[in-house]
Length: 159
Image 1 (cartoon, rainbow, N blue to C red):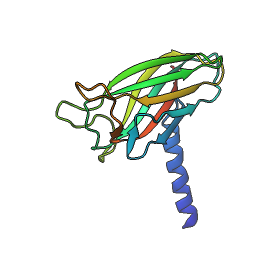
Image 2: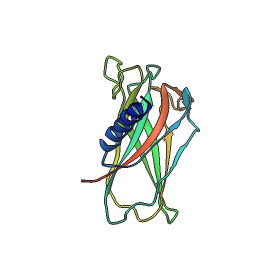
Image 3: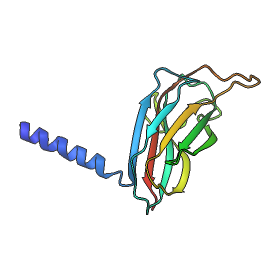
């Protein structure tokens, strides 16, 4: 019985791991129940093959406590020479009726948000992600962004 269960578990692991052949890096970090405006999520990227090109994504896990239609992010890519490229990005997170976009069967939705395409890496890089959501007509940012529970970064091989 133990061998049968172990074989079944091994088969399931192999099936799930083989379905994602483009993935090179995929990591999530928890931000708790609310993402504070001063909290910067950092990812240390592995050294990648400099002859290949990659597509980059910001991944988010959100729940029904997320109350905005869109999301603004400040994403910084720190190059090995110390130079940093900073982008301010906007993503739609909900339909007009307020239902969250993304994949998932429960109240937690996972969104894979396109960041950059056709990128070539020359060494080790760092990525810094910060939320920059503001309420309409207000200058100060939202101090605690409810509903975003995890922030991730993903690198895929370009085909």
